Length: 235
Figure 1 (cartoon, rainbow, N blue to C red):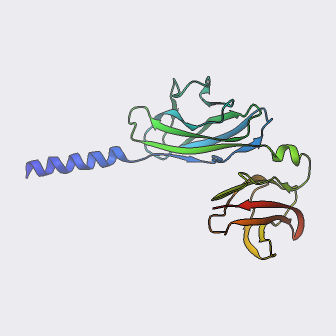
Figure 2: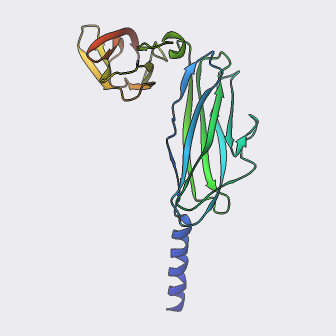
Figure 3: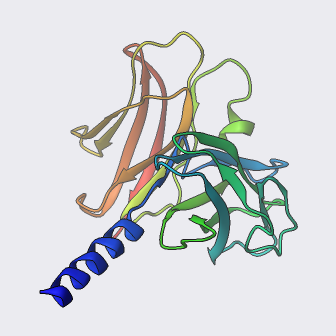
């Protein structure tokens, strides 16, 4: 009976230790910009829902990166591009959050998508952690170039042709109430319709269920046709 009691305490202790008190909010996991943008940035809020203060570290893992681009992150301070783990932790008090995380990406004129994983973890109990995958997209038809000013529009889709996901950058002028991107077949049939929620961003359009062929996608704002472009889907 004594050994059973000790075993139960051990199991309960393991469960308490494995509890995840860290979480991420307000992090754009798909930031984008033009290839000539000085920097493409994302930032996030790290929350500590536990009852104790946590010394939080950050680890960056590069999954793949566009040749010629650069990336680095900031936590307490900004670090050199070669830094993979923050040298110093940031203490987040119990029940509070920190908005000190920034990740910067410099495309340096190179188009494509670079993927990073950022993990935030307790310095003392590393199993208490949370990770986020961020894909930085630099578009050759960047929305920042094509639609500079107070206008609405969409970029060319990329990659083109697309097999599973087609990325479409968009920007909406101030004051819009309803905005959608509609996809039509060559025969004019509506095959997809997606409502937009933000003033600007990247729509990741799932085209895996569409037959191979040419399609048109149209941006409509407040029931007005703003822009129409072509997109090729292949299998």
